[in-house]
Length: 507
Image 1 (tube, rainbow, N blue to C red):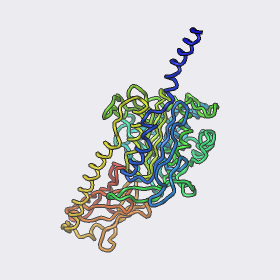
Image 2 (cartoon, helix red, strand yellow):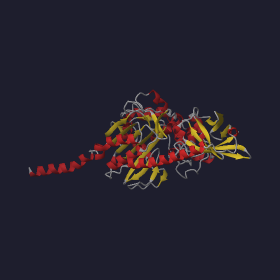
Image 3 (cartoon, rainbow, N blue to C red):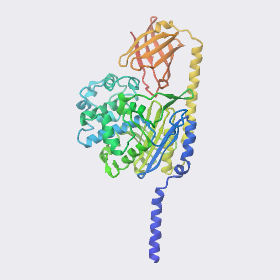
Image 4 (cartoon, rainbow, N blue to C red):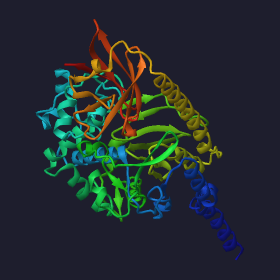
């Protein structure tokens, strides 16, 4: 009997740590709801959804706040959000699946599958591989060309044609530069290798087998959905509802619309060798391929804890944090920012979805949940991030006020406003017109119908350009003058869209 009691208590002592592993950390059990509710108020986020997967079990999948500013319909775990660049992991996984199907190789030259594929340098056109497209190493600056492509009226084919005309700022494979048009190009290979469109492949090979019943492949499909979050941004401190982005011309880079409950199924499968309900949906080797480092993003680093490198695989960022490999990505598109994070060694998945593009909570909350599960101290990232955000916003508002003060003084210009009126052209983007309307210069762009910028004099040859769509922001646009004649103008848009300027030459 004594021996049996000894064995019993030994078994209890062995089992207790295993049972404790399934008990969520105190932050998740006791503080998560309070934390999120407080944070969405501080950040002016109408609604958010959060999900956590641990050891194959859903720990949390719930919504907070409302779907739309001024509305009463609550966000729940099935509310749809545009996930932006978290689409990229789906695209890369699809191509890795096709490689496992022996339908292509990730090391195939792109031109093998897309004979019309062109990049600025003919040698790079010949050498670029599918893997290069999926790892952002073609030599472009991050977001280079995106003003042309993003939410424009260009078709996918036209985007690819213009992509081939953009001169990369850097040499081939010399550095990492986030390139949305490269993921579009990669997605265009799928119908050539498989016979199905990118969207059909997503639905039939990934969404349906994983039970992601509400997930949409294309951004335009969100308008017909019932349980969906509206898109919002913040302009000069005020929360605004904005139109949904139409980015289907870049669909493989960022068009998927999904919910916390559906993304739980995606994340759970990725943490379980691609299985759903015991059946393999995604080959394990395809998952491993996407998590293999291809490009160097940076040295890593963390404000509090140890993190030694930052790499990029295929559609996933890869980093080391507190001794664990982290597989993650974020997504930003008109009115939404989102985060998906996996820590495979811990069988931990974290999903944060928000319906305003002007917040950093989606990253702060992910960090908080990571630390809770890794046994690290509570850091209060949301508060720290918000303090920095407020400082940045205050600096931006001060700059805006200074610019508007200059405008209000009606500074003298080297030429009358009528001299700046005319037709302009960027060699790759195409046409822009500047017209005098009600004594103000208005710039309109060929491929962005319904959007315009008001140009107000700042003195010398500079104007303050303010777009009617806040996504494109407010920037200073200088003109080049020669011999009393307007020659060209340098156009910049919000960094959220693109960092690289455009040079429009007057006809």
